[in-house]
Length: 155
Image (cartoon, rainbow, N blue to C red; front, side, top):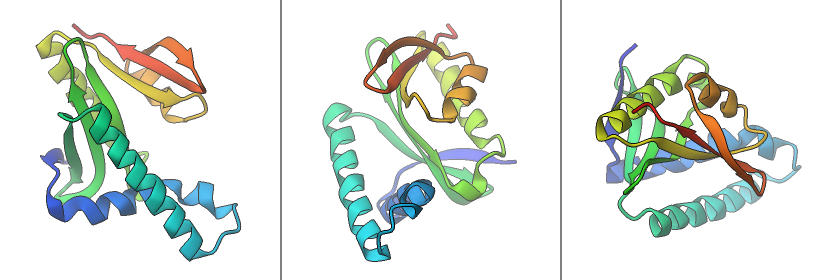
């Protein structure tokens, strides 16, 4: 399995929205909305999220995740003064459960370790990815507003 990261290119913007839509598909299915309503809602949320990321982390590195040369996900990371902040990681549902997230996060942990910094991230309390983060050595350092702030310090 060849998993690599590439800096986001302008041609990847359509993929990022599709990735966002696919990762929200199950949640949206139960709402009873038309496809047009779902698309409009998700575009609004996606655009607001992108703007928020840019405002909070203007120097973040935005990458696409490739599996055997196919774009299957996204990794957004900011290297801050005291930490690496994992802002967003998403993998297409058809590619989930294959260890790709583990590979990508371990690479991030190695980079952070070499820089002498911990990795921190927020995760929703009910997000099943919390189990993955726990397996990789992340621990809860704060809880607020339905989210945990997790940290892994592999220095």
